Length: 113
Image 1 (tube, rainbow, N blue to C red):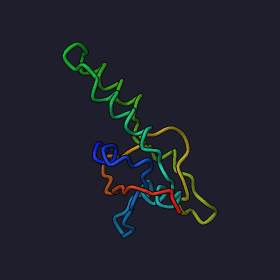
Image 2: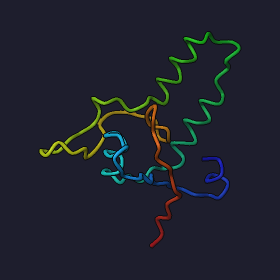
Image 3: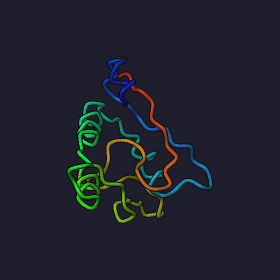
């Protein structure tokens, strides 16, 4: 993310390799085909990096991180009538990893046509 910021990238998009090991969470993110504003991700990342782990207990730090950048949970997956993941509902971290076994990557996205 910091490299994108230095390069003055404004948006990024996820790249998900769809194969037999791809989770429903990653399939739902791929189906959304969302373009993420880099500023949102950088703000969250800066807040995470500013966390004073010496002044906070491990439990407090963990709660802060979970509140600021929560991983996507299975009950946030939106399915179509064919039970295929088509999106994610609710708040979640604006950058990978989106869940514990995530394998997606992000690419900068140029909105100029």
